[in-house]
Amino acid sequence: MGLVVNFMNNLFTQEIAIDLGTANTLIMYDNKIVVDLPSIIAIDIRIQKVIAVGEKAKKMQGKTHENIKIYKPLKDGVIADYKIAELMIREFIKKIPGINNRLFTPSLTMVICIPSGITEVEKRAVKDSAHNLNAKEVYLIEEPMAAAIGSGISVTKAEGNMIVDIGGGTTECGVIALGGIVCKKSIKIAGDVFTNDISYYLRSKYNLYVGERTSEKIKIDIGSAIETINIPPENIRIQGRDLSTGKPKEMSISYKEIIPALDKSILRIEDAVMETLSSTPPELAADIYKTGIYMAGGGSLLRGLDQRIAKKTGLSVFLVEDPLRAVVKGTGIALKNIDKFTFLMK
Image (tube, rainbow, N blue to C red; front, side, top):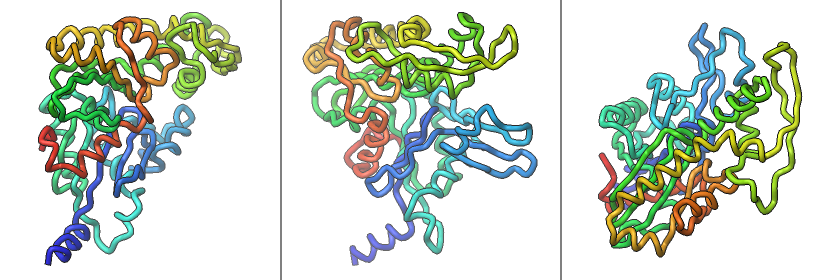
C-alpha cells in the first residue's frame, strides 16, 4: 500500500529546488541541475509572446528593435516585475525533462532560495508567484544557509562557520551555527554592480561607451581585485562607441586597469564582511578563527578577491568547490531533507 501511495505522490507531485538569481536561475530536479540559464526574457510586445529566455534572450540584448523588449525581472536578488518573472520561470520549468512530457501537469513542491535581507512583503510575493506556477507547497531558504549546505559545511553542529556569497544582485555574509544564521549582512553590491563599474570607468576615462555584455565579458576575462596575480590574464581588445565622435572604436585593455574601476565596490564588500565579524558572538568568532571564511557565488571568482578579503580580515579564506552552483546544490539538499531542516520557512 505504501508503494502505491508513493507512486501516486510522485505521479501527481514533483519536487524542484530553485536558485532564483539576479544574473542566473538554476533549477534542480531529481538530484540533477536541469536548468542553468541567465535570468532574462525576450518578449514581442505587439502580441505579448515570449520569444526567448535564458542564453538566447541574452544574445539579443542591446540588438533588438522597438517591438522586442528584453526584461531582467529580478533586481538586487528579489523579484522586481512579478508578471514577467512568472513568465520567465514558467518557461524555465517547461525545460525540465520529466515534468512537461506528462499527460497532465503535476503540482509542485518548491524550495526557493532568497536573500537574507529580504522583507516579509517580498517573501510573500515570492510565495504568491510560486503558487501561481502550480506550486502546492513552497519553502524558502536564505542564501547564506543554502550556500553553506551546498559547500559541504555541516550547518547543524554547535560550531560557527562564516560564508560570503557574492551573487549577481547581492552579497550575503552569514555566520551559521546549530542550523541557524546567528548574524548576517546583505548588501546590494555584487556582480551586476561590478559590470556597471567597468562600463562607467570606460566611459569616464576613455570616452568609450560599451554595452552590458561587453562589460560582463571584461569582468569575466580580466576582472581583478589585486595586481599581484600568479597567472595574469592577457590584455583583451574591446569594441564600443566613441562618445566624442559617435564612431565605432576598438581598444586594448589590461587587467590592471580594471582594479581601480572595481575598488569602491570591493571596499563595500570588505566592510560588510567586517561588520558581520564584529557582530559575531565571541565563542563563534573563536570557531571562525580556526575554520576561516568560505566564499561562494559567481562574484567570488573575481581574481584575487579571496586574497584581498584574507588580508583585510586576517583570516584564511577558501573558495568553495563549484561556487556558481553551491547555492542551488544546497537548496536541492534542503528539498530532499525538508523534515530535518527546521530552518526552512513555509
